[in-house]
Image 1 (cartoon, rainbow, N blue to C red):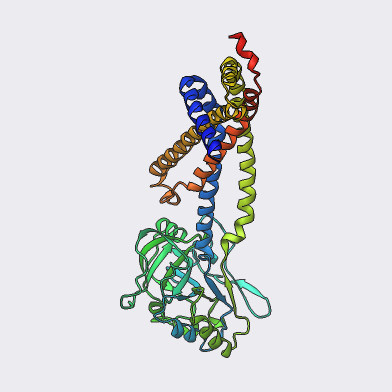
Image 2 (cartoon, rainbow, N blue to C red):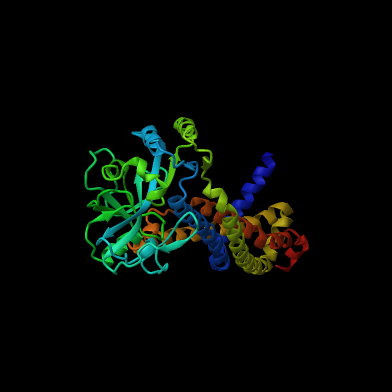
Length: 430
């Protein structure tokens, strides 16, 4: 073991001297490898960042991995009250009561009938009865200044389960006293509508006996392409009783409950709702990373294959430089053999030179990648919020180091064998 260690140390020292003595050839080898190693680093970094961004977008719509979503809350009398009472003041579970609302002039056609995105036309809002007969919900109404959107009343802060990203203003504060004028936080699509159209501050909800005057306090990114707004449940119930929210005759209301993975409130709530007729209750655990894992792996394999091709081309360049270098150093290696240097040490010298060159190249590629990502986040970060807080994934740096070492071995293996096979008699040419 000591003898092997000494040979390795000798090979490394002599290899380092060879790099210093042949700076130009070392530079040529690094240039050949640089693009290949950089491609591997960029692909790995891009895959990591893409995974983070895609997962982040899915979390906005579905929820953070590990969150349980409870669906199928019954429309029976008392179901909404049971949900609200069970979750009141809790931070490990949040209920979401979603319904349609119209803000603006009364008795007019909304500019986006049916709650459609403002650059799309869904052809109006249809209301269907039990027999399947559908009619225009706004039939006979004149066009006016009103916006239709989906509103979601929350029992608590939903952001620990769905990390909505603030754009402007503020989020709902559940620690203050409820106000008679409900405070609304808009998503980006709803905010676009209120910037484009100047509508009166009068909100109407099917089933509410009176119209209300909302306050717009902020804008968030929630991943929803339709106009959407969020408000506190206790502020909405000042105008719309809980038992009317799940009344089938009052319009379509969707009730969901987001639960922390280990909260004891889950069993309590399910028991109460089943007693009220909730036979279709289902609690599903969010696992977005697993759902998109196959897609990301396929994308990563495709780009890694392309990067590997570039890396092999770079290793071929190193191979050519290495063979030329060994050809110039034939007498040197023959002389070393004549004075007793083992063949393994000669091969180790050539491999050591290539491995050190590969490490230098990997360091340069990683440095360029980190600097480039930093520059992109500084320049584009203010206009592209998804770039804010993006950091270089150091797993990509590890991949770059491995790629540099592999390329060094591939490019130096044949020259090392050739150096080890030089006969002692070659020294007589000198």
